[in-house]
Image (cartoon, rainbow, N blue to C red):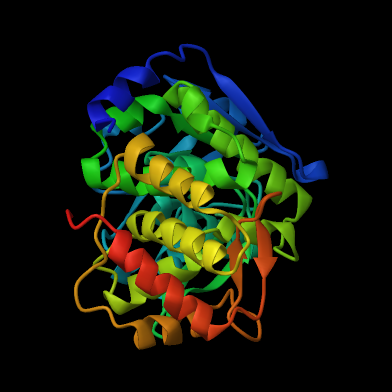
Length: 360
Ligand code: GLY
């Protein structure tokens, strides 16, 4: 099992900047990955911008907030905690942008984890019906997932991320220095999400030094987003492991964090694939190897979760179409599989829970 410390030491193996291109025609943008990448932020701003509205959160080290000496800068802190991922926060930000005199030629810069980039992106998508946004991702999860791809949004009482917009950033910065101060639980959440890229790309990403693995994960996501920006098809593969994950998050009232739930969801999806005869036990073992050994995530299912309630929540997942739809593995790769039988889900849940390590 690799500790966070070992992974961070590996991060130093990449000394140069990597640039991943998200190829979307006239909205193509770069994701800059490397140590000190924050210094590239100003070069990613639109040339028209005179004003920069930095959207961030308390707790983000000032060394991770880029400076813009040639621009008029205002800084807007949003609250910490899921309850601030709301339309109220969007309204407050848009008012603050107006008071700062932001025009549609100016730019929003979101500096933080996935919550910040989702909110900054949606505020930028809404203000003046859309102004440019650049993301500076400070968590692993934001680097490899939330900051790239253009989905933005906030929660309403009826559900998480139910209101939002597709709004691609003008550029994304992933400064690997940010990971050195990332709390271990946040690191684990990013690693849970990173594990899915092993199965999406069918690559032994663990053969790459960790820093290059980050860049490769971003590249895998970018290729999928470029192929299917609005999730009409292949983009749904990015939800591998997410159907059970969303149900666990709901049933634990979000006590279990997203990336942790995704790690469990990947293992469950492997069992379901095996129950349905799509993959062999060796492939299930490979899922456990990646999640448990490569990323050191050895979680138990949270106590008190009941199969009926999990299945109910999976059926209500907004990604589900008519029946319960899963992304499942096969001998040739991941596929979107609608109409999965409840009996197979129950069998897979039983097998999954009995195999899980009891340690939290
Ligand atoms: N913003 C995350 C995504 O588009 O997938």
